[in-house]
Length: 76
Image (tube, rainbow, N blue to C red; front, side, top):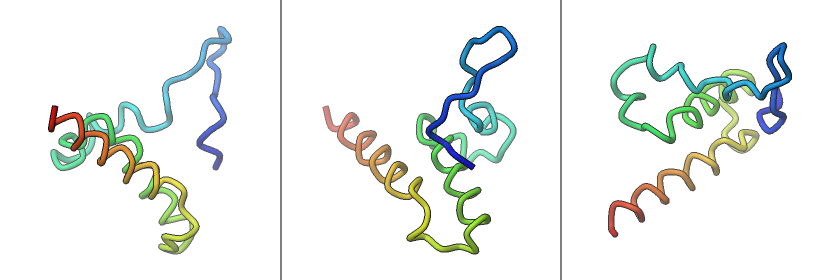
């Protein structure tokens, strides 16, 4: 699964990210992640697909960066 490649709907418009609306359907803990929830769900998918090999999952770094940005923004 390639996360960086945008997908397009039949009209040629970009589709929303794979897990953008999944947080609405998942538990409250994922909803609390807000902007980072899609990265968290992508990380979960990667861990399942790589037999829980954290080093093989690029979403680990993306989620870390997202969380650091949120902390920095809260400090302003």
